Length: 66
Length: 181
Image (cartoon, rainbow over all chains, first blue to last red):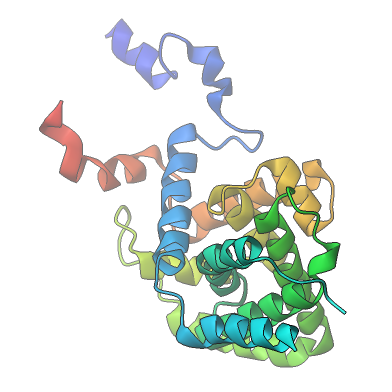
């Protein structure tokens, strides 16, 4: 029972709940949001580069040659 | 006239296109516009390549060009952009059905509703792999400003997605993991 109460209060290290950020968000919630932000970013980042962007660089490259 | 772009530098540019597209999509929430932004960024980078110091952070340099291009366009056609983004957000925005499970669509809808400066800070630090210091340089503001933008972005996302109770997070993870230990 005491153990449970302890848990509720943030675990044995209770006060060190300073794990939370300045805005009081738990590290778990922070990590949760972080995973989603990264997943969303990576989804686009890992797509093949569209041809027109590669072509642009090729064209710029050639225009520099003359 | 721009100096020659070495093949090595050219390859390095190409290697950043994926991240640039992801950053652009996160900023403007619209894929076509994102590709226009990337195109313009590459064009400017190529034509101002002499202002890039080789050996410094190419990715940060390119991200800086992209975000400056985006924000100056926003200023130019502010009303237009807000309308477009507002419609886009409204189209995507559906209140998350239930506590707990949050799919990417909900998340994206919430993200596009953040103020642009908060969204930018969150993406730079939380997804693109920049330090707070690098993000501050890219956004041309103080490190403390980046930190507070990131904090505010997270807090607002959590609010919008009803992720405030620790239970919500627990509910999202264990399905896969519970018994594995």
